[in-house]
Amino acid sequence: MRAFLSIFLCAGLCVPVLAAKSSKKTKPKSNAGATADKDTIDLVDSFLKADTNKLPAGAIPVFMKIDRTTLPVRQRIPYRAKKVELQALRMKIDAKKKPPIRRAGQDPKVGCRPEKGTKQLVDSLLKMNFEQLEPDEVKYLEKKTRCSECELTEEFGLKIYIVPPNKKKKQKYPRRYFLMHGSSPAMALLAAYRGGSNGGTNFFSGGFFGACR
Image 1 (cartoon, helix red, strand yellow):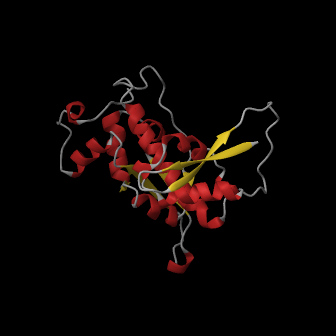
Image 2 (cartoon, helix red, strand yellow):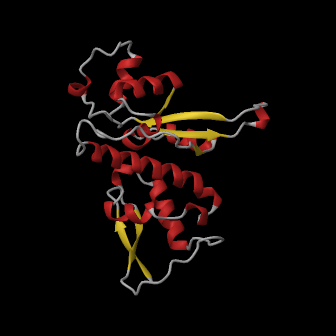
Image 3 (cartoon, helix red, strand yellow):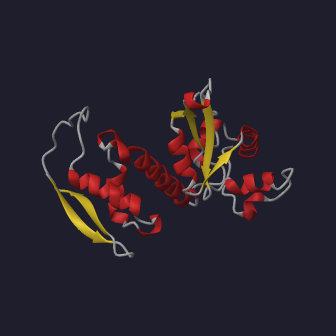
């Protein structure tokens, strides 16, 4: 059984927070065909309306564990975007705890698959301080960080989405989008590249927190 506690945000928004009660361990049930209850729907609405920096830290783990397939259709993409934003901000904090060479001695990770996305998801993330990267910019980051594309996703928060073609615009092929949050340490490299740098800058002194190898 679960109980909801009310937590007030700085802006005066009342956010219902889900707190798990201790109970005997039971075999987890499948969520296939399940529908989120009203309290969960209200919690998601509260998170989507609130400023990210005013969200109560104690409620975030509950929010992150919600199965978006159980939410109403109107919430699914906004929930997904908010979750990606919170993951990016968590990665920024964790980056400061990692060594400068993050994957020393490990073989490069390759073969990961892009996520399936929608144009609405991409547009939502672009409003959340994510930036769209061009393929040549991703290649530049791979070279400078000595990370594979897969490792950029794990270490620096690169998001790769495959968006189906828009038939109304007579598009024939899916489009690949590369996105990265503005808080990612790798954005220091990207800013230099966009500014015309050939790579001679000391990026470690400019706020860049490491490489893969």
